[in-house]
Length: 254
Ligand code: DAK
Figure: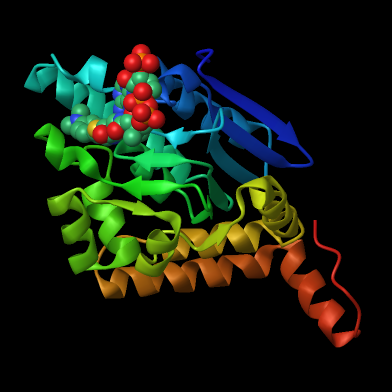
């Protein structure tokens, strides 16, 4: 893994930190590849929750690396986009909840990285947006699709067409982040959410995520839900959860 990404796993919570603070954690190629590798490692190590964040006091991730991108040919840009998509799909498909701990600037590819996570918790200092239009490009790491899913079609178009940067409170009002907390409470809040999630039944969380993420037409997506639902009746957690209810006690999940 490149030195610009670190992965720590503690108490079944994996924390992936993009660590290039001198460039506000901008995503160069080794960093994008290292994100993909870190997610694979977190999954292989059996982490139940993945937290994604940026090193330093200023930035979550300030975007794709503009210095690197400025002289790319279309073919090279396509390759770069593919790498980004692979890494962000790995986060999207991580078999447990993922939380973007948005500790500062989350712009362009940084906003897209946050959007690939299930939840976004922002410091009051965070600034989010898709300013690519002012560089003569568009979001290339999934933003045109994931942003509209999170904030709705018109708001996504406005953010992408105008390239406006939202402060944390506006991002919350747009629905782009799920909550905003004081900067010095961010770590604690995310740790608490992550810890709560480690106590939930792992297979049921993964199934819920799979069903919510399902692709295809409505019939296909509803079928996916039925399959995920039915498969859970083959898990110890389903038996434990229901027996605990009947026996009027707290469940003790795997
Ligand atoms: N790329 C490279 N370096 C960056 C960077 C970035 N995105 N953002 C910041 N840096 C670097 C700065 O150049 C500076 O480096 P030095 O000059 O010190 O060497 C250092 O980080 C500190 O930045 P500033 O001095 O600018 O710090 P400030 O506090 O004054 O400003 C800022 C912070 C976040 C407002 C400002 O740095 C800024 O506006 N940054 C750019 C934000 C931005 O436009 N982000 C979107 C990038 S475009 C695609 C794939 C991906 C994408 C699109 C297509 N395909 C392949 C098709 C995605 C595109 C993007 O993400």
